[in-house]
Length: 189
Image 1 (cartoon, rainbow, N blue to C red):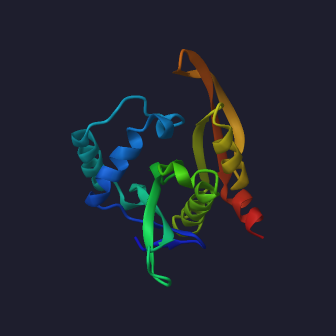
Image 2: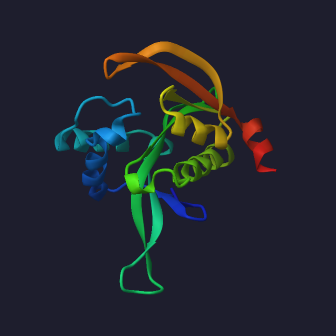
């Protein structure tokens, strides 16, 4: 798959060399606070996940989110730095729908719009390249920052699983949000 670019970032295919970075992110409790993961993952488990991910259809491979950063000491040279990943999960080709998941693993890049920008790139790819009709996601009701970012890219709340997630000694709702191709296209005009 070719790189997908926006003004400040690109999405690229993952490499085996990315595994240590992924492992660092998913074993940081601050980062996994709003993810469906709830236990630490070993290097072996992450390597197995990577191998299994490669066996799935290419459209379901994780994409690495990278930002362009200046190289220290050089005025005009820039390089790409990974800050997270994003992925379509279990694409249903008959009904033209899929779930999407995203993680910004580098905390210093939170609250700067990179998640929204990456989501916008994947929506464009999903609707214009893969010809999907509906893209949906799950988010905990406590993840106000995430909900706001998803709404910014066109997602709307369609349902709620009440008290479906247990964390920190209490239950949280899981909110289902989705965006249809026609809704996304209307926002592009």
